[in-house]
Length: 120
Image (cartoon, rainbow, N blue to C red; front, side, top):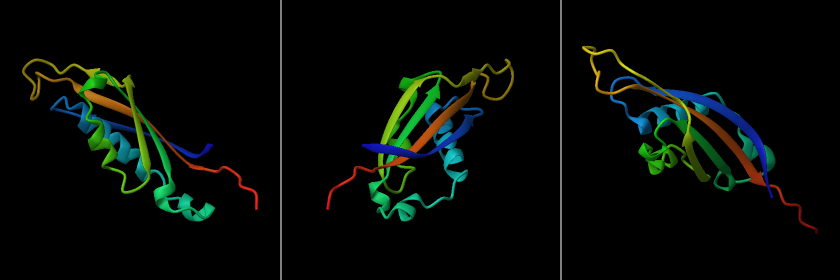
């Protein structure tokens, strides 16, 4: 059974290109930089044992490249869930990038380990 030991949140944006993957990737990095706890070492696990669940909210979930988000993590088993959320802010006509909205993405990052007890 995987026990969640850490939850962190992040926000990222794509200001001019309307790039949902870029906004989500920036949100992931924002969440990661909030934390410097070495969970694996604290519990005697390898870093590769980490079970990472990433929940991403953007207005166009199908426009997010999940493989790009998984590549942000140097280790661990990563599951990515992308749902409708975040925020698209229209850009005024005549402004640079006016054809695209400013995209804001939100993420929740959970880290845990399989803490199943064994006898012996």
